[in-house]
Image (cartoon, rainbow, N blue to C red):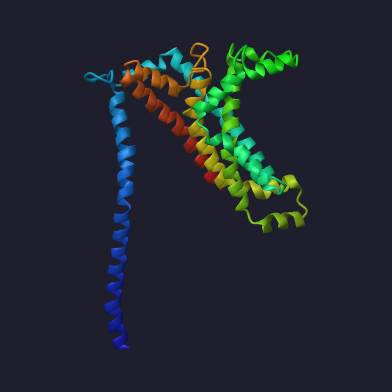
Length: 304
């Protein structure tokens, strides 16, 4: 017994040293990722905060102005209109993308002839550049000359598609429609992955217990889809609030500045020799995106 105790006293420190060496090696291997994170996120964020407090044209010497850029932003009626447009676009796009993406996933989960090809067709628009997709839809919807305009004119419809850019509500509906049409396939893929991870035994057990299709969906499928819902909601909010390409190609922010998003506003201020002010607006946009993302993650985590 004494020999065994002696061996234990020798082996225990060796195990601790091995565990400690392994832990040190793991921490060392994480340093490259931490370095990249600091280089491409932390440093630009801190530099952006510094630039947002200055009056800088991007060329000359920066002058410290404190919170004047932020005050100027909230006093600009054009900027307030851009916030309204960005939020309306994000709310409409995020809701419709998740609803249509989930509907697509439920339909594409069922076996039928040509299912793989149908999935590819639905997902295909997501791999095309949104700028190119916006120009394609512009040529289709172009007032007075677009293909759909002439097609509906031949059908004798009373709805004048050529006037879609003449007022704010119809323009926003077209922008949201194009964005949802392009990215619904990407949302569908994530929901499909979530549906395929749900054990079939749970659905079969609910069916045996006499649960109706809607009860199986709300009681079994939907709760187990929460991880996929969280991913889609967060990515759709981020993408919709930072929208640039679709609006730029379809309306360029018009008519006037009615459909201008904050991303387009930032770009125009930056190229208008107001780099410090545009950086302040970018910081505001960062927090506009961060708040709903944190709220959605908190709500889905509580449900989970």
